[in-house]
Image 1 (cartoon, rainbow, N blue to C red):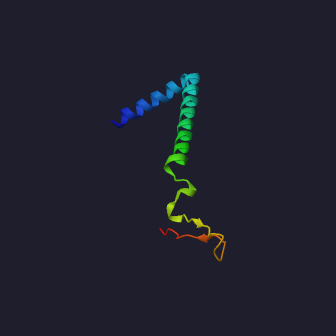
Image 2 (cartoon, rainbow, N blue to C red; image 1 turned 45 degrees about the vertical axis):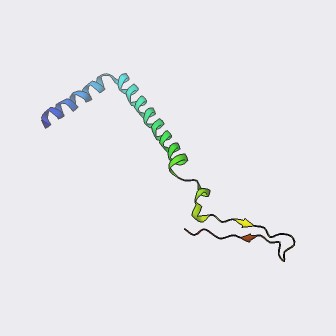
Image 3 (cartoon, one colour; image 1 turned 135 degrees about the vertical axis):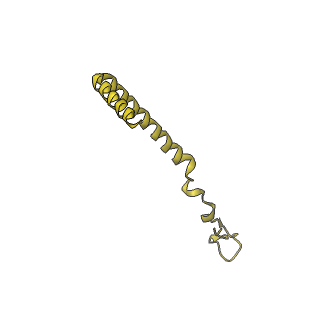
Length: 83
């Protein structure tokens, strides 16, 4: 069983050496395909799987303005959502 595997691998290597142009075309096309898949996964990972930095609701807080007639016109921090 293992001997057959070694013979098959040896035959494959000999055929790849014999047809250098076909081997080069196969390696280049596989490299481009792998690069395209990695780029697509990186894009999907960045846009879909990882949340945006501002979208964490546990770290959000809001500001409210006091009316002009009150003692202070400075913005007041509303209740902070603890998470």
